[in-house]
Amino acid sequence: AICANQECVLLTNGKTAAVIHFRSSDQIEFLELPVSNNKSLADVVSEKDQKVTKKQDKKHEGDRQKRQKENITEQAQKKDSEERTKSDNHILACALSSDGHLIAVCDDRKFLHVYKVEDGRCHIQFSSPLVHRCTSVTVSKDNQHVIVADKSGDAYVFNVMEQVKGQVSKNSTDEASLSEVQTTPVECQHEDRNKGGTLLLGHHSMLIDLLLVDSDTLIVTCDRDEKIRISHFPDGYNIQTFCLGHTQFVISLAYDDARKILMSGSGDATVRLWDLHGHELHQKNVLPDIPADDSLPSTEMNEAQTDNPMEVSVGRFQSQTTIQQISYCSDHQILFVVIYKCPHILAYKLTDAGDSCRLTTQLISVLKGQENVVSICVSYHVLWIVRQGVSRLIVSAYRIQSEADTVELVPVLEDASNESVAVQTFSKQEVLLEVPPTLLDLMPSLWKPTFQEDIKYENSVKRLKVESERDQDGKRHKR
Image (tube, rainbow, N blue to C red):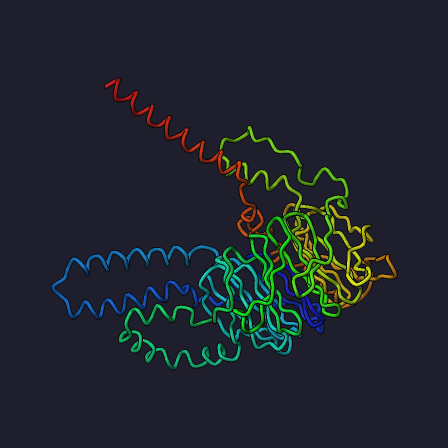
């Protein structure tokens, strides 16, 4: 993923992350994830429960069987923790604040790490445990809050000042906290599991993206079940409206602050425009605008290759042409659309149509390439692009120049700007440009099996069960 603003640009390949400040574009700083915080929130709570149990066991020394069970549980959890520690950590999501002073990173070990940028250097401010793995993260404009969306459908808000104060006083209060934990009933401890962050809101399915809009008074969240929800911030329980109309998962959000228009991209290959009251203003199917290319996913699928309906579902997803990401340039009113496993980027101009807003029916530009696009970001007048080559990632940037209904994307390498130096600096970092692990690709898990595939799966399970019973009966008769 790539994030950028007028101060700096952040790039991650899922294994490591680095930031370049435009005041010194020839220098790069890698973000180091704290290695001491290798326990998830569930591990911490489990250890607290064990400490309480050990103290209670001292009062019941005769109960050997109970102690043996606790020892077995403790050894199993310790072994699981060691295996998880040895495994590679991955970066699941990252975000830059609007002024470039804060960087938020969520990793695979269920931790949120927040860095402060001072004098071109990144300093860790705090690390806080998460309940579930993150799917998206954002920072408020005032740098006071970090909001994290996770796979369970919940969004948590972290107060930066409170977290920093808690991190500073953590070492001095460890002993007092330990004493308090040992004297606190187990029931009370379970109520404090989300001490790091405050639950803001929840969906019934996986959250995929979130966005703060309207001067950070509203938060927009989208999920796997085709829903977009607009809630008040920070009172997330106060729902303003829902934006309903997509027929597949909603994967990406964008916002026009001047017109107060929300944009969404979905697995149904449509881009839709909404007002903040949930009314759909326009929808655009991007499939006809994709250039014909043999490298694009085929619309046909050979289901005879496998009898596993779950594999059929994944194959059906891979055969679909779907939107992966959208990004909006408010200065030029241009929406950029990325298609999953496609080397081209579509550019649309937003134009007024009476009292509403619509996308032009014809493309104003198509940025073609050879390698598939994995991430884009628009900052000021620059479009940042990350493509995935055969053996490494490729970073590029284009200056956006538009006039009327036309747009020209000029490579920044043609000038001597800070962005040009930053691109050249990134291109020299082999470790940072390693191809990310396939497990970080969220797209295949978003596509749901159809009703027919569910029926096919049930029938296959029944068939396998009948065949297994038949084989067992045959073996009995032979005996």
